[in-house]
Image 1 (cartoon, rainbow, N blue to C red):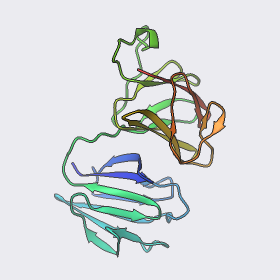
Image 2 (image 1 turned 120 degrees about the horizontal axis):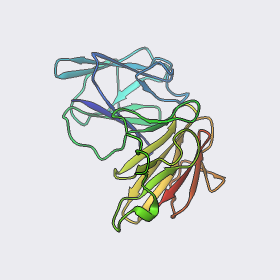
Image 3 (image 1 turned 180 degrees about the vertical axis):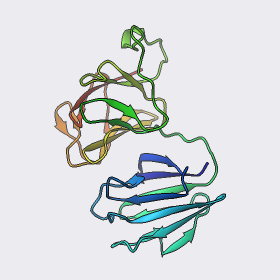
Amino acid sequence: MPKMIVSIDGVVIKEVQLTKDRTSLGRRPYNDIVIDNLAVSGEHAVLLLEGSQVYLEDLNSTNGTYVNGKAVKKQLLQNNDTIEIGKYKIRYQGDAVGGGFEKTMVFRPGGTAAAAAPQMAAPQAGTEHHAEAHAPGAPSFIRVLTGAAAGRDVPLVKVVTTIGKPGVAVAAITKRQQGYVVAHVSGVESTKLNGAPLGQDPVPLQNGDHLELAGIQLQFKQG
């Protein structure tokens, strides 16, 4: 199944499967792919699925839509084509290749945490994954400390895990050879690490570090 991988400054922020005949892209929250940035028009572009082919069509956007550095109005996408919208890059994958990216964990109003499809099941009562219970070599994880999902653990088993609430605050946790780093990706509110606001430059994570975004408190646990 074709998919789009959205990134900014080399940090992947979301991955979207193209399951509909028409997938809209823009700044407005009703789009299928929402990019919360003023360089992106409210209704910027649309992806049209026709059989096994995907066409990209610009919707008369203010700043234009580019494919591999070239401005386009309508373009048949090829595998690994890169769409450029402002500072964002969206890589098209025409084949169902297993990716190394985690789905975004979204914090819904009221503090409930839910993952973008596929859903991440919350731990059953009595089976929460606490640090003491993790065997040596177990993956690192993020623990939700507040809100309706308090006590839930999110394993960091992919290259990039994005967490937060689109439009409010989204952060990306990236697995590197020397450990994990975190960076603020988008949103009107700052992501905080141990009480200090984060920028878009990645900052190393240490065991026990506290994160705050979209009104939710989180803790990083080193595996």
